Length: 307
Image (cartoon, rainbow, N blue to C red; front, side, top):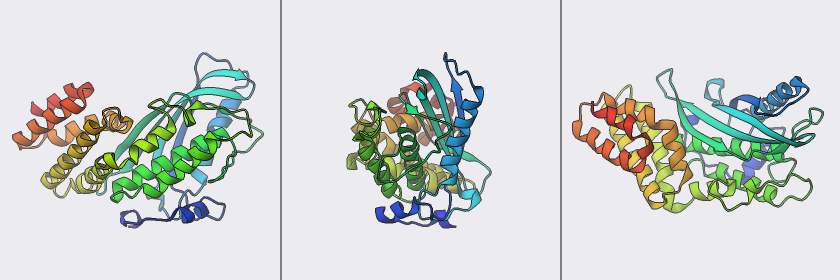
């Protein structure tokens, strides 16, 4: 199957893929837009915004690879409009959850759950969403393009060791031209701020060689672990344990890494379920000790593994 192949594509090839002649769609997004303490006189505007964003993500080809329908990356995006400073300008928060199938099962597993607290953009129902991989069009299309490449990169990392690298570079290109754009009034500090949740910081974080154990941990957790769990559960648990050790190493090296936090937010229940039925008490105790230290927020879930 295509997605099981280890492939590294050049950035040049990816740029070509993003154009209108590209071959296939990678994303299967569900989008929900809601309003929070704001009044929009025309309720159909929210519906159209929602549909436009979904169509933009799902109809565009972001890579050179051909995806079968069952291989498309599922993601859910929740956008909450919090303010409308002026007509056509929207301040919002965004939460994104991407999933991936576990082979041999009907189970979809979360890959990442991440939030953006300054998802701000201009939008007009009369202006179609457009995107260029190497030049600024609008803040909304840059935001969506950035997260599309990020999601694809993370998905690739679960199928091939460090397989997401070229897609992170594409996301970095979006950050570069958007943070420096002066063609519109859509100033967005999320592209160039210094806080730990800024978009450039996320990419610097995940591509930092000192945190490579996190990315290789993704491959071990999903491809060597979950994908083999039905056939060889004990070997799969051992692979997951090794992967979690890598994630722990990355988290200890850089305690503030957002991706470690996002990983455990998405995976804590699943990790507990994986090890709860293990007969290896020493392995279970080692797991609980390790994760209680690196992910104390979910320590109560991990304690149930020992019961």
